[in-house]
Image (cartoon, rainbow, N blue to C red):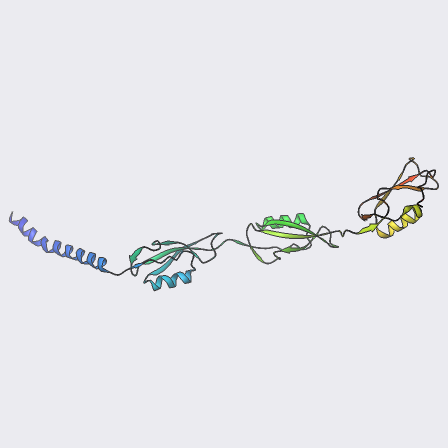
Length: 241
């Protein structure tokens, strides 16, 4: 019993010291200054760092993450949460957006529409609306929006402007007053497409125009094929009074 009592006397100061230390630390922690953690979500790292510094806190970026809905260098997550009391001097941990992935828009001028669409898909961009513009480079890309070399979000559309043949219109003359040869010469000179059909199945020696697929004195597109009907020479159009 004597040795137990001696051991108790020996351990008592250690226990008392340990308990006193714990209570002292607990009291210091309880009486230390507390601050409200600011809401830094959506702020840039620089703005967040300034806000936490003014609140007596520190900022540490834990990692960056890809976010299509949050701009580059903006806070997405914070710990501790916003608007809660925390110990002054504490570290605020944050996750920061590295923004959406950007793609460089390729230059498409001079490409066919099919080639342009394939190139855009390779760059993870979408072929957008195709606008046809009268141009000598028919069937080729003549412009685009955004322009080649610009940066665009992956998955965004690129509007393509493609050259198309000009719509040239002519007025059909009164073929009753001109012959077939004269009409052919005029159409050939203007680049008008036409085809001759013989109503009797053979070419007469003296062909006469019996009809047209385009009415007289009406407008028609040059690239639309016009049919010229020829009879065997025995029937003429009635002369206008």
